[in-house]
Length: 98
Image 1 (tube, rainbow, N blue to C red):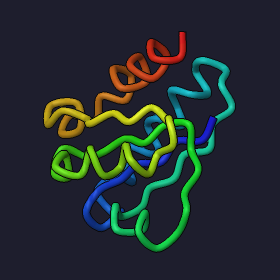
Image 2: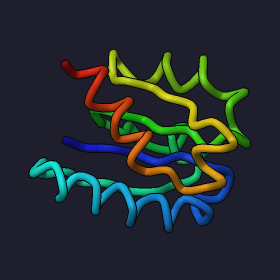
Image 3: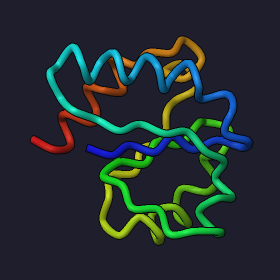
């Protein structure tokens, strides 16, 4: 599974990336998880199963969905992101694919 974490500059998602990698391992799922600025979607074609948006860029949701080609796009809530609740977010991902 390929997961892309999007935020303004691609830096604030680093801790979330590590926590999601831990959740994937805990569930025995092989996942490639990368973090990048949302502006990179305009520079290159990004293919992924899941796009997670930081709450600070929730306004880009429609644009990301138009470029995501059917991938799961989820906007993390300020609480989920602020408290780095990777377990909650991982649950949303699993629920979507069931």
